[in-house]
Image (cartoon, rainbow, N blue to C red; front, side):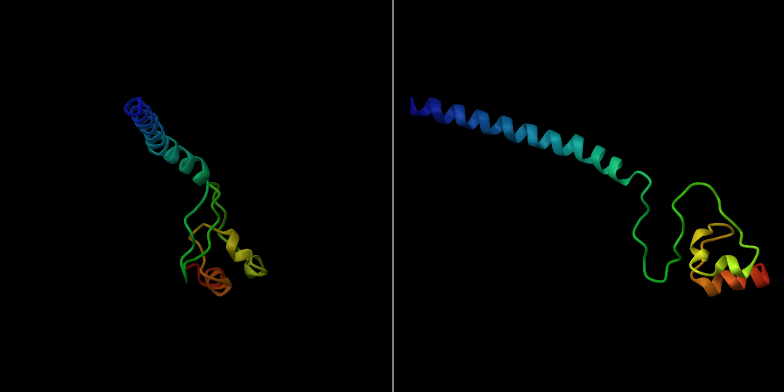
Length: 94
């Protein structure tokens, strides 16, 4: 009797373990993909901020467009590091 109970518990435990393993293998990647949809990687120090949106924005044509964090909105010709980088582009085209 005791042996049957142990066998039953072992069988139930293995079933739970199998279901948990399958959930990890199949659901976690799907959940990560859903959560990461449209999310960019964390910004590294001194890396320019860049809009995650797919439409292209830019280039800036006037220095006033770079002010009040406006430089963060442009991704063409590239993502600017800061306001000065944006203003420099407007002045030199580089």
